[in-house]
Length: 416
Image 1 (tube, rainbow, N blue to C red):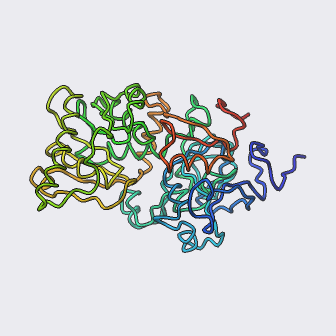
Image 2 (tube, one colour):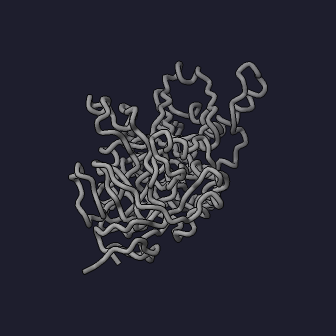
Image 3 (tube, helix red, strand yellow):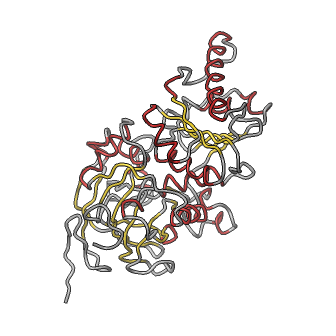
């Protein structure tokens, strides 16, 4: 008779469906808030108990995203306090908002997966009984919506993750465990940004300007725009990133360091300073025309840097076009010249992750081979803090970073 140990070493998989009492996890505690390299520490904690709509997944690999840089820093949210308000007395945060893995246990209400299924998880977490959702509202706009593994505890930086059943989708068989953990958060976020805000959905031959083209979000946005027949143009921080972006499908690239007008826009009454800023924005717009080969502005601008770039994004966006934004990695104080919004009838649209249908659409495109996971560096479980530190300092390589958790080595597509 096979018995279950209380604790297994990282990379040592228990018999499928047999859940140990404890697990290894990369944990953030409030007294360590600060640089991610120090904030994340491996500890042994109890395996979480499940609610009726939840699933326990043995994590093979976990994706790295900027939200857990914020979690490590303790800003703009103290995520441990967020958990405490939800009745979680643990005093810690286990992050990780992307996973690939194996279903080990499930609550009584979960019907879409069974024990032993190979799955990927998306990070959209909400209450299925939320009146907004029951009335047909978009799930990600619901008052109960949260980002799993950031605003909720027990994410994928542990041997076992606790996740809602609806968040799980079939792992694409063609992908390794680490590739399958690389794409969902950024890919589904990009899917919603580019196709979720009708009538401003990407159309054939649209010019689409994509900030951070070599990063996780940008890598997916380039491919999604190209797959729709559009003309993606990537903005990057170095010419060394041009090849990566053009290989993914970018028509061309712009090095943002060739321009110096970034930051909060000068007040419109300061004629000299505003004129200098406008000259920089016009020069940036000309760089777009040079790549397109004609005087065409982007109908869609894919934004996430925020404070430094939003004024220019609104300026170069085409008449009747849309700037869609999902983050503010350079800051949140995005000043705009409203004349360009009302007189040119441009749209400035916020966007946050995705709903179930959008996550499924992205996963189907990945499974069909239309979109590549754009996996970058792969780290071991004891390097969770290192990976987030590199992201915090913008020293990471192109693509999406991944942590190997239960998978004992790279390249595996099935159980070891």
